[in-house]
Image (tube, rainbow, N blue to C red):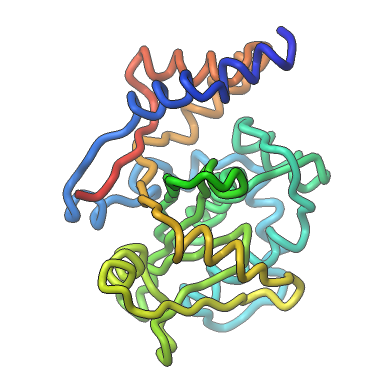
Length: 261
């Protein structure tokens, strides 16, 4: 199948809107607060390559490390050892291999592989997306990021892996959760952000455009069974990705986009 035809099925505006609508639903605050990726994806189901690379991420043995520091260490390694590039949309093992080989990777690819590193490191994690209403083509496609749970801080924390960024209330040191960010935006209160990766250059305008100044709606990605998606994406890799995702939707094994009411 030609690339133009694959693009047509994957990104044509009308088909994209139909697909997004089919996968979207509104849910309660409690439903989103109680969900985490780890409930559906067990350590034993994560591909072996994650364990192999994990030994490089945590090569220096430390007596104790907080959940937030652990989350940042994974994110820094992933950002610094991959170049990024075109979207991949492959199985989690194939996506990680391609990213390490410098063959691509966008925000959603970073979020996908970050989920699995969190699972094998006993970090609760969620994956989020942003639906953005804008005429600016640079942000109109939305954005993907994660949220991890810190046992020490006893709260969820928004972490943008591809941008190496955490968000804060003004003059406070405890990072924001997604719901904290929503609340501060609603109340028109100031929000700050900073990079936790000394090797990245902070793109202040883009981060502001994505998270703070834009008319954006966060949604949680749920029902993503990594083992199931890996199996179908690897077995049917001769087919265009959109067809495989469509098949999983038809047989009731698709992920969903859940918007907080």
